[in-house]
Structure formats: C-alpha cells, structure tokens
Amino acid sequence: MSNIEIQTSQNVAIEYEAAPLRDRIIGCLLDMLILSVGGGFISMAIYSATGSGTLAYCFIVPVVVFYSLTLEVFNNGKSLGKMMLGTQVVRLDGQETRLNDFLIRWAFRSVDILLSMGSLATIMVTITKRHQRLGDFVANTVVIKTKASYFITLESVLKKKSAEGYVPVYPDVTRFSEEQMLVLKNTIDRSVSYPNDAHKEAIILLSKQVAAKMNIAVPQKKLEFLKQVLKDYVILTR
Image (cartoon, rainbow, N blue to C red; front, side, top):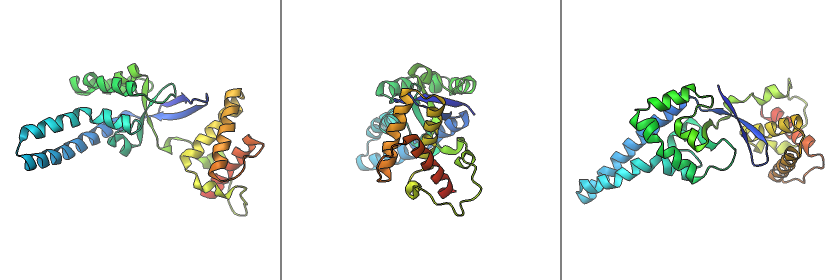
C-alpha cells in the first residue's frame, strides 16, 4: 500500500492510498466492457434506423476515442470503471484537476496503453512510488482510492470499550459519513502536529461547515468542538 499526502487549498495535508495496479487494470477492463456492450447496442440501433453502417461507424468511433476523457472531465476524474472500483484522478498539488490535466493524461494513453499494449503503463504503475503511469507524471496527477477502507478505523482512534451509558454532546453527528469524519480526523491531527496559521484557519473553516451541517452555532473552542464531534461519532456509529 502506497499512501500519498496531498495538500488542500488550506495547506492541510490529507492522506490517500494510491490506486494499486490491480484496481487500475480492472477499472480499465470494466470501461472496455461498457464501451463494447454500449457501443454495440448504439451501433445496432443506428444501423437498424438508417441502414447505414458508415453512419453507425462515424458515430461510435468518437464515443470510443473520447470516452475516458469526457467522463473524467465531467465526472470529477472518474470514468464508469473508476467509479465501480472507487478510484479517482486528482492533482498531486491539491489543486482542482483542470481540463489540460485530463487532456495530457488522455493524450499519453496512446503511449502508455495503446502502442505498448498496456505494458508501459503496467511497468510504470508497478515501479513508481505513487503508482503513476507516464501520463500521470507529465500531468502531475495520480489515481487514488476514494473509499475509506485504507484508513485506520475510527474505533482504533478513540479507545472506547462500550457506548453503554454514554451521553453524546452532539447526537446529530450520525448524519456525517465515515469519509467526512476521516477528513475531520486528519485535519485535527495536522493542526495538533503543526500548529501554524494555515492549519488554524482550516480548523475554523471546518468548524463552520460541521456546525452548519448540524444546524448549531459555532462554539468558541473550535478544536475541542471538532474533537468532541469525532468522539461522539465513533461511539454512536460503532
């Protein structure tokens, strides 16, 4: 497992797991299956309606060529195969992935996957620290796991043996997802380890967002507030 630190716009480092080669291959195969089945039905429908094989061919070729680029651009870095595997393309510097980044990755598919029959991409993803193919290196992107299974479970963060008799301060924390709480935990950890202005600002912003989600006023002691929210979540959701 290869963990990657990505700096957010608030200079808070969040850890993700780089998508392993297995997940990237399976995601690619799923995309190919979707294209094959979907493209076949579309071609048959066009041919049945027009009787023109040329028209069906002219329609389906752009769909196949631009499938991955279009999905990643308009679906936040995720093709359908990536969605099924819980992976996503992101920038290493934490900035929002731009059209130019996706274009670079897409252009290098011809080298990484098509011309080399996938061998170059396989080698690069296997030997590089962040599991990047050549297109990722040039675009400064990486494919990450978006699912929370790679994090230490929240139960191990707070060593509570039982929820019996526990009265939560914020019972509405159950409306948050585990992924949201893991981001909260990482933000707290970074703020405690590196108490600089950027992390203090991140704590303030996160406190406002959490309080707004629960429809309460933002407490004065924001770091303690977030710690209590995390504690309540662990107890109430285990």
